[in-house]
Image (tube, rainbow, N blue to C red; front, side, top):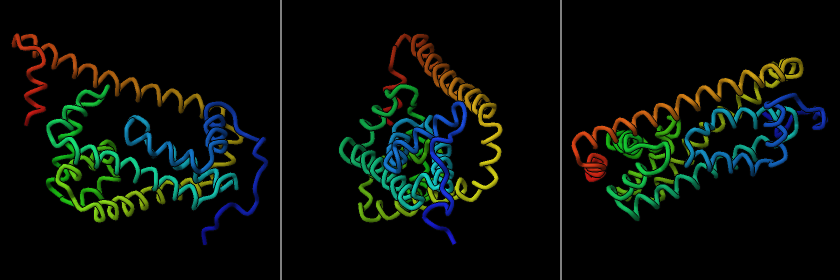
Length: 238
């Protein structure tokens, strides 16, 4: 049976080396509230993946340095708050203006909005539930729900259920694999930190390059037509 914290807490000062140790120490310092803030930020900064934050919270819960259920509740409320904000934006601005807003956010594209809209059009309210498990889509699935004025009670229930299950899976995995992860981190946290930093750098570089290349291509296409910005505005009006 899952307990609120590990039965044998460790000395927080006996941390781990490198980037991993810094992240775990930062999460412990910020506490469960920090987990919720990180998930809230993910709603607006998709390159910050919840899959990288939540297992760390679970591992800290295993070590007795964080409360499992409070971390889960904070993460779920953070996801709900972010979803409410995008829902309100969609309801207030409508489709075209919201689409233009998303397209003008650095490193985001109209296509991100279109994917979320198509997902919602296909699945309806269930898309809000399932979309919580899909990167990028989970950040924007609230927008078409707001545009279509999905009942707020239903929207909230779907978001809480989807986010709650998703967060429980990832926090639970960090907790469950704690006994296997801990000895590895104690011996290899420095090496693993360098590996994690390298992977993060490569993924962020790939993400930025992909988005910048697409934006430059759109700009060249517009210039070739002699109508700068028309293509993007045309897409925004659809």
